[in-house]
Image (cartoon, rainbow, N blue to C red):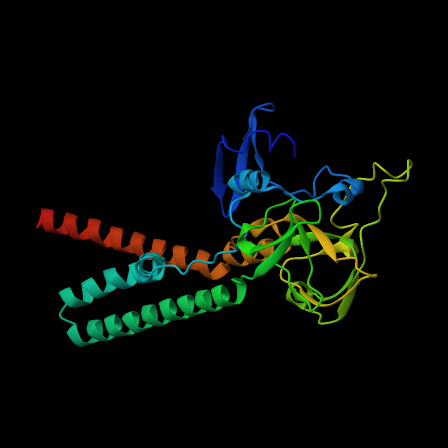
Amino acid sequence: MGKQLRDENLIRYFVVKRVKFIWNAEEDKYQKLRGLEVNNTCSYFHEAKGLSYEHQRKRRVLYGSNSIAVHVTPILSLLFKEALSPFYVFQVFSVSVWFADEYYYYASCIIIISVISLSTSIYQTRKMQRALRNTIQTSTIVTVCRGNDVYEDIPSEDLVPGDVIEVPHHGCVMQCDAVLISGNCIVNESMLTGESVPVTKTPLPDTRHSSSSRNTVFNMKEHSKHTLFCGTQVIQTRYYGNQKVRAVVVRTGFLTSKGELVRAILYPKPVDFKFNRDTYLFVGILASIAGIGLIYTVIVKVNS
């Protein structure tokens, strides 16, 4: 983590499928950008006091805005992608032949059916993209600690890994992945797991005063019962006396568990359906037959 944050103002990176890869000069290669869940001990989170304005600004340069933006594909892009499928390419050539043979009515009907099919497909795709965007994109005001028990309200888009946030007593929808360090929370993780069963989250064990477990490395899976995941709803918080319910932000944006889920929807793994393979085979066979017919016609015309 320290290598990634050595100079946030001068970084070389590229983004693939909403994942940022940054250049590591010491190892001479690009590495996937990660949050604070990697190579940090449990005691590190309890020692966090909050980020100053300058540190938060630098980390925002590295991590970007804490948002999961879903863009609706333009109509022309969808039309271009759909029209280049093997089925519609074959239809174009077929319609051209039918028009050449004066099958005007039949060719016109095929054109009308193809246009309706393309329009319906594009409409359904954009409708689903808009529904996903409206479901995913959320924003709220979050209370962060600036150190010395000084708290400030900022937009959730400005959160960065390392921020210490206060979980409101009346509950909220988490806008990031955060490790709970004080107080208890009852959350609903149905958005991620599909099960609307309340789950109790407890503070991460404080190992600062234990010499045997002080260097215990934080692990997101092993310490999931101490982690508030992005997209989950905090139903209720419990605290003792005047103690605030606080958590340390570990991941933001598409690095969060919710971001990974959205990326899986936006960029699914390629599946080679048998129908697609048969479509290319069908077009190839027809092209071969047409090629043989063309050669035969040319030879007959030349010899006649």
